[in-house]
Length: 213
Image 1 (cartoon, one colour):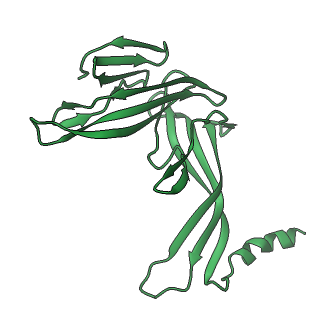
Image 2 (spheres, one colour; image 1 turned 45 degrees about the horizontal axis):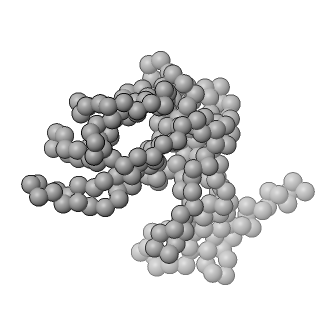
Image 3 (cartoon, helix red, strand yellow; image 1 turned 180 degrees about the vertical axis):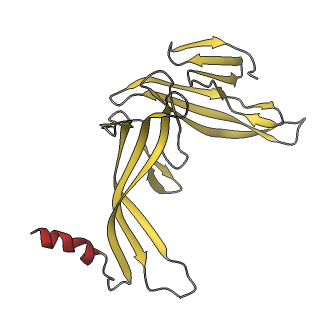
């Protein structure tokens, strides 16, 4: 029986009539790390993709190999210094969405979310920003967008904070700034039509603020 199991990858990787080799794959991607003292890493937040990879064999010699991967299962876990893994079961905010007639599943990779550790806690911060519409300013040569921001703070078991707001980018040091986050990832400062605000995610409180430096 073990001999037959060992043959399965061989059969899967044989060229098919379509000129394609197929084999199972499992890719692991580090999404974010939680630092300890100095350069030590205490924890890693990891995305695991499992599915089928294919390689088109029948193509002109001048073409580079065309490797395609189709994930059928995606999971997340937190890996500690000892190597112990804890499954993350709280990512219910990763939605299936539609764009241009095609559906896609959000992930913590590929730029959907900005993911960071919340320092001195067991929490992780995920931010999603989406431009709502362009607005051309009369006195400058750039276009300013209002930005929809979705915030989620989670641990391995649950979402502990969830908040959405609309921000207005501001001009600072020659660039457009969407928001500022303090080094510990505890406080987020942004601009609204009513002025600057700072959200403290540990206290779950919003307070008036000023332009951060």
